[in-house]
Image (cartoon, rainbow, N blue to C red; front, side):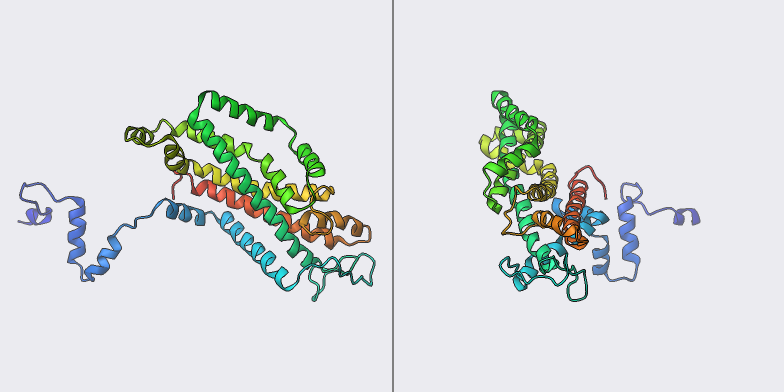
Length: 328
């Protein structure tokens, strides 16, 4: 009958076929290649990092910041190989204040006749190294201290957190200036150690907060039940699940360290004058500004601004990409 033909076919139990079965039957009734159909209906399995990369690519400003940062890193690596900055070679400029930007000198020259583009490219190596290495030191100390405080709790947690409170109570910029003046020798290593050893409390606070919320989770209880040691539980099971906010905070620490290096060097307490960084390039540019040499200060300052903005955009994108509650 027509009414029976319009009804969906029933299985042996008399129940109508499931939705997935009807879809499969419709696909099999088509003239398409079965292998092509399988590829279309198959679900793609993605791990946590692949999902994070997909979310990160959808964050346009973060992706633009990543491109800018890659370009700046490539410039500061490649250009100094072919155009090393030599402080002993002072050719002199025929014009007071230096030559303005032109085709053969795209960033102009200083009043001493040095190429500002070469100065910025070589100075970027020092500024980026200070930012990255100080982040590694601060991140390592902060992760260890925060993991121990959050996992152990009790008296150990109280002692470590009071130390962190002392660091937060100290005026940060003043301590860095004093430490750079009395303990720094004007080299990169001293400045990296000073900034790194004073920047870890924020990471420690973030790691401790994550450990406090994860140490009572079911997978931690299961690990304890099978006899896993506390050290392995803390750094093998809990720490990987607490790294998302730490990664975001570390990206921001890089930007903060670059600005601190520029600030300290600008005041004359950072990188020595016989080396070049974006900070002391700005400090030396003060002498040329009175001659109208705006380009000497503009391009190092623009390099700092672009680097810090790109790193902040990347950190913003990582925050959204690594959040398990975010949706595509």
